[in-house]
Image 1 (cartoon, helix red, strand yellow):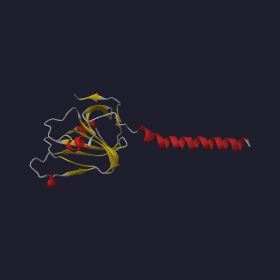
Image 2 (tube, rainbow, N blue to C red):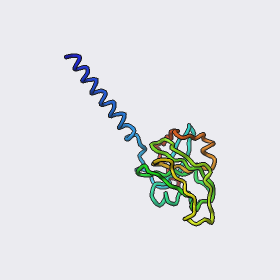
Image 3 (cartoon, helix red, strand yellow):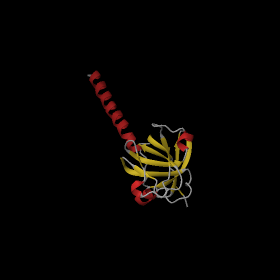
Image 4 (cartoon, rainbow, N blue to C red):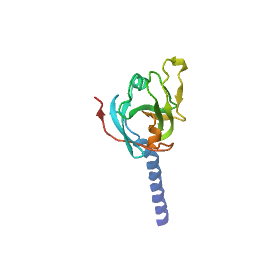
Length: 166
């Protein structure tokens, strides 16, 4: 009887442990609800801290860094509600950038040196697509992927600070 109780208790513990392992990544996902467009977010990649401007709304994501003459802070971070294949272009851009695709706080791909295409019609602009579903994108200064030693699989750490860019 004691052996059966021990097995039952062990089974219950295993079930709780499995549930915690499954539920933890879902609950650990960064909550963007307290942030708005143009807030500045601290992000760490490979122990390097970056200050990124947030693009959260559809309008801010559509414009991105377009029509700016310099890149603000260290770049811009884009949040999406659901993981999906994401496509970016260089519409209205005046400088080259690196694009980093992220899913569940892990880098799933990147583009180095995406160049502006001034004078090209929207229909003919090059499209840059995430290699797999992504829920976050970071646009960085040209050369930042190399400077930061970014690799597929690297983890990003988002700090819970809420500073306004204004």
